Image 1 (cartoon, rainbow, N blue to C red):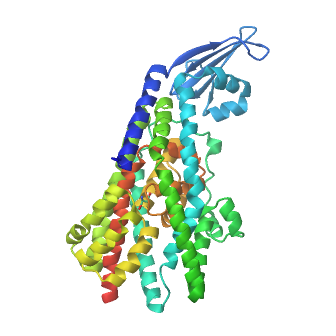
Image 2 (spheres, rainbow, N blue to C red):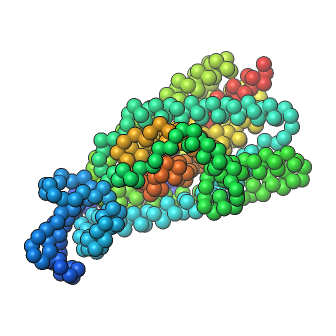
Length: 486
Ligand code: ASP
């Protein structure tokens, strides 16, 4: 039976969701609702003007005296009106008014937007559900795939050095571009969090030291339950290395266990990703129904920031490294790798592309088999320049939308470090980067739900970043092979 490829399905889900949401937004996005019955004692009338940009309340008591509140970004006509940055704030300070709004004061666009959000939220829950076991098994099987002799140790350190250096370069590129383009500022479509909600910007030393502390979980099982991803990643790497050092049957058994678990988790994640078209449809419908349209203008800039930064890394940074360290023509090398790069683009999966990458490296680029078979499988699991860059740009974009300003430098460093570790932990499958982004959002105090905004455009960005992931693995092969020869 003919079956549409997943990325087309997702695209269709996105367009349908956007159409439904936009329809609601345009035709049912603004309403004036006057409630005069069933109000708490002392109130005679509540007038609500609900729009997609914000909501105005006028509460009239029995003496005809009135108070006004504004939530969101609408022009405040009444100078005495109290302005709340978000509905959360309204719920805390004016619970009875918030309850009236929730039950009777919403436009159809807001009402359906909320319902769609909950339905799409089921898809996000599924992604969160697989995150922890997926990270643990993917990472352990990647590290244990290394084997364990002395010559392997040298290749290991070189490979890790390359991965670390290029991933950091990618993240720095992403940070520079997102600071230049500032895609999330000027959108003004999301209520900005109150200043009190802003993450306290700790000193840099404090921030770095707490990252080191997180890498030494007092109780790894508690870290799994919490979940604290940084602790989980650090412990899994340590566990795998020591299993490798124990060697023999122990290493083999742990490796087998990790690979078995990984295969199952991968199958589960792949199944969940099949639901992406529906999930994206609901989330897209929710966003378009409840947000002013300015957010899409700013998504265009967000996509541009990601695309430009990825292009810079793929076309300038990595080719320079190949040229300097591997003494190869980057252009000829890219041509040799093109089947793998194009497959990576259309499949959005480093793991899926791996057999092709291996064969291109060996048969088309003339790199020794032992280099490729060591560098590439590990790279597909832990070296993800494109993902690391993307995570940094996406989280800073969300932070710009959420806080209405750039994150301070110390927080950007937290983003850089967590993005590096998140990219190490991400599996080489479509949308894995989304699962991992929760770590970084959590690290800078942003709600995981804020991801909803970027989900709609994730597929195309996933295709781009996956090609960069595979391109970086391939360049790593060329560099390590040249170094081994020297
Ligand atoms: N899809 C990417 C990969 O396979 C991972 C990600 O979602 O960033 O390399």
